[in-house]
Length: 305
Image 1 (cartoon, one colour):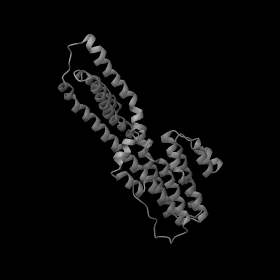
Image 2: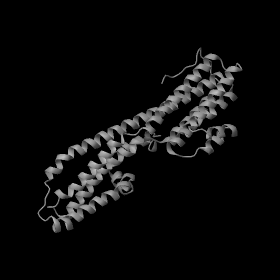
Image 3: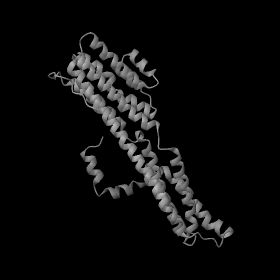
Image 4: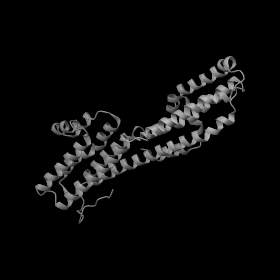
């Protein structure tokens, strides 16, 4: 989670120098540089060996390459815009998950004794960690064992979707408190509403995770991009070899870099700081129950989705 100092550093004009200096260790650069080198090698082979020996009089006009450049740019732009929209929606879904977790903890604290509120917040506080384990394929056994009883942890780990097990535990807990009279019906209904909102927030994240940008679009973009970069050296045959190689590498880096960023953004849960969000849920839940009992409102405050 960024702070004010992070934003100041991000917006400082020194960022240009910093970004250039760190170029060699850029994740995107390291991922696409092998492909850029392959296209550069192809350019070398074409200009140095293939064209002189087999097609000595061949020259593809650069205007022919330029005709398709707008199509390549359009494909990359639409893909990147779609990926950014998915990132924004994922961030919004996770944001509502944090807010509804905090609201649920607040209602538990307001209407239950302190010990019971803390008990109800235990499964609630690790909801983010369990969701993170599903979205990133990571284990969460240590978290469930630390925050739940052995029976509850075993139950959650046995579920196909572990977060549904946590929500069932919370529902069962508040139902028991409602049945024994500790929790009034109005508060019980408010908590059930919040659990439904939590369910919808997680459902949004699952929908984004399970439904990528249509693979047909991704495949077509890759094919057009590769074809364009293969044809580019055919229009650079009359320039000097070093200039052609530099132009091929830089052009490949720019276009493949945009495509790679779009691919990374398409699966937003790999780049969103989920650790910070999970810690925010945990801190907020226990901050709510750790501040002591507040004056009871006439009705619980709930947040609409």
